[in-house]
Length: 76
Ligand SMILES: [Zn+2]
Image (cartoon, rainbow, N blue to C red; front, side, top):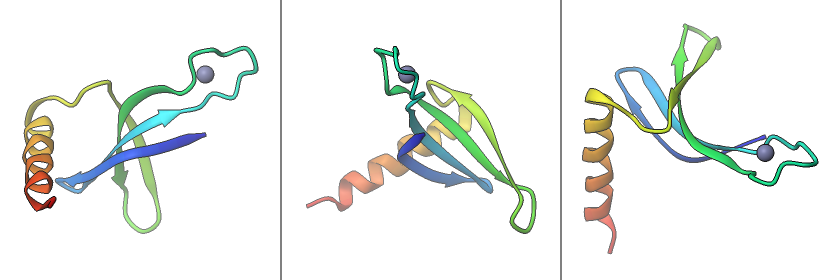
């Protein structure tokens, strides 16, 4: 089970920051993450999910920092 705590789009990819619940009965560290994933459209209803990592890098990270700043300005 996953919970998406953040998402934004960049160059046709939807980046999602997800917390993962593994549902193992003995797990004491749930939820895991958050980790970034990229949801890539393959045309039509087909999509693929790529694991990105704990942090974003390069132009994606710059875009995320920029959009996060913009939403701060909109907040009252
Ligand atoms: Zn777990």
